[in-house]
Image (tube, rainbow, N blue to C red; front, side, top):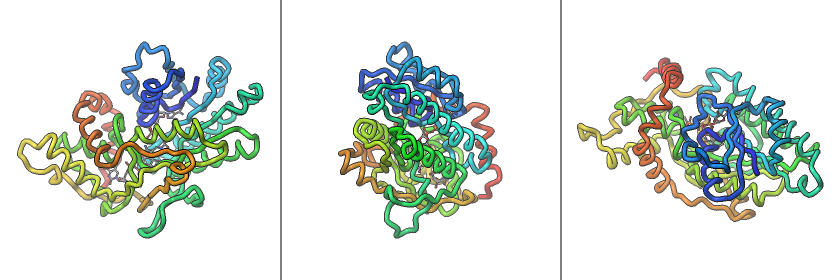
Length: 355
Ligand code: NAD
Ligand code: DAU
């Protein structure tokens, strides 16, 4: 079996659902259930013996030790993290605790467990760390896309904490020989994306008749990948990646934020027109920029494509249409995640931004 952390969050829950659907191997899912973790994402797995959910913290040394000794997973896939850049600007502490201290403790537990294994199990064991393109910093307009050779230049407390965790993972291979793999992926989108992030926030705000807050001039560029394609890349790296190696994951889909917002509006105009038949674009509002906002990310995924034969199944056009349709079909999921703490965050993040 494999142990996944953060499997009740956006990407983790998509990974767990796909894993159970596509393999016969059991999966243990350890998640702290922070504001971003949601067991409703996993509702279809209720009663499924292949999925064991455990609520807990990757930094809980005794709990992880017990889970590893009891279940003897052949691999750990570490999704657990604080993931929202704006939250890291308001309150960085949780990012340091989970992304750095938590990853360190998970690694240390993994190393101690790995040392107890026989030669074959030791050679086959994998620790896959899920990371981000943000560790490479910000690109200028004409810079080539990030390769695995780019130096680390993290600019936010979030990306700095992810960079620190990547370095710890690297060191556990270099120093102890732990068979680690690291993936650095670009921006994901798709089902179960928490509506604090750009694409789901725009969809839910548009439908609620609220403003669509675009930071700064809206010309910042992100490189978008449908979440199921990120999950297939992780499965492929787990299966065939070389221990100690880093693989960039991306779908060659660079888009300016304002283009993303316009696309979401166009799709909603088609699929769920406003009662007054005006376009949702009328709700777009430019607001004060994010401090230290990275201008452009772009991933060069050629290593993963050439060495491991991975390629994404969705284009941006097919993926974004599926995503908007998913939110239209899952209004109840949206209502449930918009709890008291969600409302408080939205007020905190947007109240002080001038329009
Ligand atoms: P998310 O915020 O939606 O989910 C994070 C999950 O981790 C939640 O279920 C939360 O409860 C859990 N968690 C948080 N702290 C924990 C702890 N201490 N112990 C156990 N569980 C804990 O995040 P996401 O967008 O699904 O991102 C998952 C991973 O992928 C992160 O490591 C992130 O850095 C990385 N990543 C995300 C993107 C993206 O676009 N979302 C892109 C590249 C990489
Ligand atoms: O690049 C990978 C990263 O992508 C992941 O590591 C992070 O976990 C993930 O959250 C995401 O980070 P971003 O900061 O790029 O994502 P976010 O959805 O917060 O913002 C995307 C862009 O949209 C960014 O340039 C900021 C802008 N934005 C965001 C919000 C929430 C707006 O213009 N308005 C908004 O209200």
